[in-house]
Image (cartoon, rainbow, N blue to C red; front, top):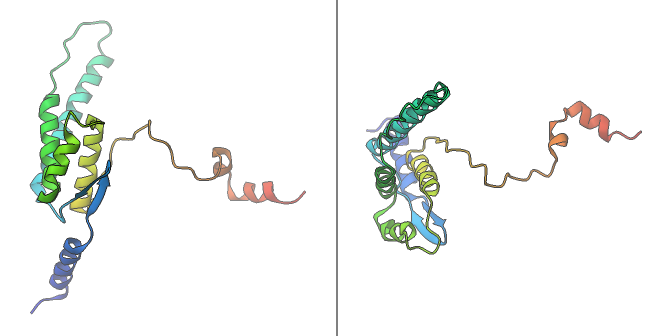
Length: 169
């Protein structure tokens, strides 16, 4: 006999596995897994935190340098190692049937190869999708901002000012 919690738990996992998990990336259809082991997300978190600590250390060193030539510490993870970690994470989040498609997209000889920031953004997206936990990526200032149909002046007006501005004189 199952209690309400276990029944809801089983139903939620069943629904997650049955839903369409495919997505289009650069014209290639990929499918993410319904769930991943917590260790996969932890690997991303660990590498992300290591790099964040290093960046903070470098920022502090540069802020207090005052013309000194203090050596900047080496990155804890090389760029090549970081890309390997990201590739492993992406493959862990994708269904096996999508691995060959990912390899084509990821190929340095692809017509429009993915940049490191693209790969990082996909890792963040897939971790969020496969863990059902919210993830926050780095803001991309080069991407267009969504259009709301109002100017910044219009959207910043208080409701009272908007009514007053639109009221007939």
